[in-house]
Image 1 (tube, rainbow, N blue to C red):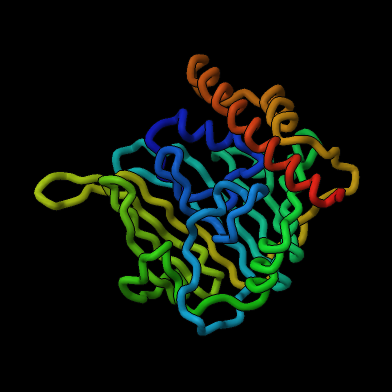
Image 2 (image 1 turned 30 degrees about the vertical axis):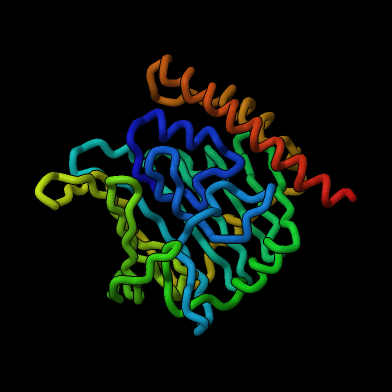
Length: 287
């Protein structure tokens, strides 16, 4: 999920609501590494670039579930970011994230439907942004609907070992981002969703110091609340940039004015890139 260098990084991430915290992510600065790895296309969620996915050809039936996790920092620098992830037995997935305490729907819900369509839902402004999949993405998503890999990897990094966590088998996978070392505990039965991760900085002498952790605080196996996946028929379709501006017109983030201005500028740049992907994806559907 989130291992962030600064509050600005956090709010820049949150400002990108069209890809909100979905896979809300393990992030090192601007780098995101939690998401479902699908073929790269112009319409692909930027966070769908490097998640734990299966290397083994062995398959297993995936379980429906509901989980909550929060970020913590041993040095007292946690941003209190909380995430909900839920999966239905038909393969639909929702990611919801917000700064705790607060309404988990205040910032948005990212719903991926069984056909691969992704809908960013903004309940606070009654709007949505729809991302239709291209054929490669749709094929990839269909292949992951009911079954998943028996083993999780992260890019080219195989599991170090298998452990138990929250009553689930988890593969422990480790990789480096620059000088930083990241370790995740990913559950194959849950589609390689991670239940714990930590980012460590070099501490000298070959040792490392934990900088940030993301911990699961609740995991329930079984069908999640159907309301988490609701996409109401009266929601207004908006481009990413339109939705971002309207959201922040009704939201006052708890950061200094200069930081707010900085992340809004960054958010505008990110939303402009999102608009290009949005237009390209939807133009294919109209053809």
